[in-house]
Structures are given as C-alpha cells and as structure tokens.
Image (cartoon, rainbow, N blue to C red):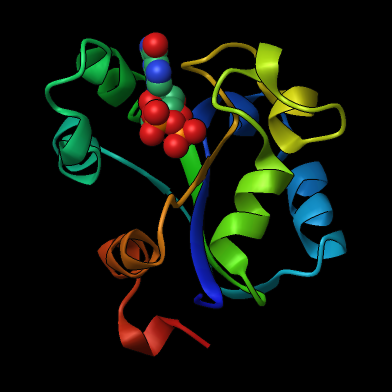
Length: 138
Ligand code: GDP
C-alpha cells in the first residue's frame, strides 16, 4: 500500500469549468496536494503517457482528446491513495459510475471521463515523475 497517487483533470472537465469543484471534492475526501500544474499535452507527449494502451483500439482517439486542451496534473497523498482515489472517481464509463463519484458528476462519456487516476502504486510513481521533478513535489 502506498500513500501516493497521480491524477489529471482532463480537457473536457477543464473546458467545462469544473477544476474548482473537482479539486474541492478531492480535498474533502482527504487527499493532500503534493504537486500540481496546469499544462497542455502534445500528441507526442500524450502518446508516451498512454503508451501502455497503444494496442487498444481507442489509443488514437485517447491521445487526440488528451491533447485537445489544457489539463491539470497533480500528485495526491493519502493513506491507501490509489484505491481510495479510484473509488472517489468511479468507473471508467460514467454511466456505470456510482452516484456522487467525480466521473458520475462531471464526465460525459467513457472517453471524455473528466479525470485520470493511477491504477497501481507503481504507476502512480511513474506517472507522477512523468510530470514533476523531485523539486516540484512537496
Ligand atoms: P481508467 O483506468 O478508468 O482511466 O481506464 P482505462 O485504463 O481502461 O483507460 C484509460 C482511458 O482511456 C480512460 O480513462 C478513457 O479516457 C479512455 N478510454 C477507455 N475506454 C475507452 C473507449 O472505449 N473509447 C475511448 N474513446 N476512450 C476510452
């Protein structure tokens, strides 16, 4: 069990003006922000971030979407961070997400699903260091 996870508020949620509401829900759930920035991914950077999905049929669509606008990237800290954050965001497809989860509240489709959350402790560390140098983590 690790106490770190990595998240992005995706372009759909940023464009719709949900940064503040999503961060409030993250804070209320007990996560501490260790690092945060707003940035924009190129197709190439999105492709590298999602390289594990490159054989999946939606890879191109995913990279286009993730580079279509600004994102907010953050490293979050809490006991049992990875699992608790996956519970907080809900299922990949918002139609199947629990009531009150971030994806249920803010996502519009399985692709444009408002937020990213790491799926393992190992990936949380890899993804966090993809965006943040050690000197940017507090
Ligand atoms: P997650 O761990 O819940 O984010 O889900 P996955 O690891 O399975 O997929 C990564 C991301 O790819 C998701 O969050 C979606 O943004 C996107 N994605 C997953 N399935 C689909 C799909 O069927 N179509 C499209 N366009 N995007 C998808």
